[in-house]
Image 1: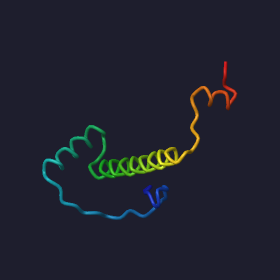
Image 2: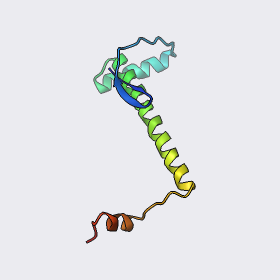
Image 3: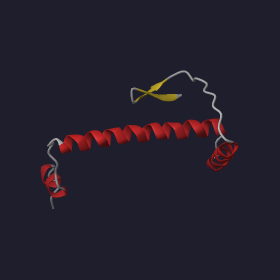
Length: 88
């Protein structure tokens, strides 16, 4: 299985996690898993992995915004095209 360790994907042994969730949530998970063609365990792992990826992306975006607030140079689309030699 692929998991995140310090925000990098690494191959690791599977670990079991047991949680109690409301019946309605379990039913919703089972329904979504069936629509996705997955068993509930695989579906929950995929959902958690996507959430971890989203958290990582949010952290990167927040760090970029902080750098911009602190004066890091930004470029307009036209400046970027000129820098990369992509002008018409």
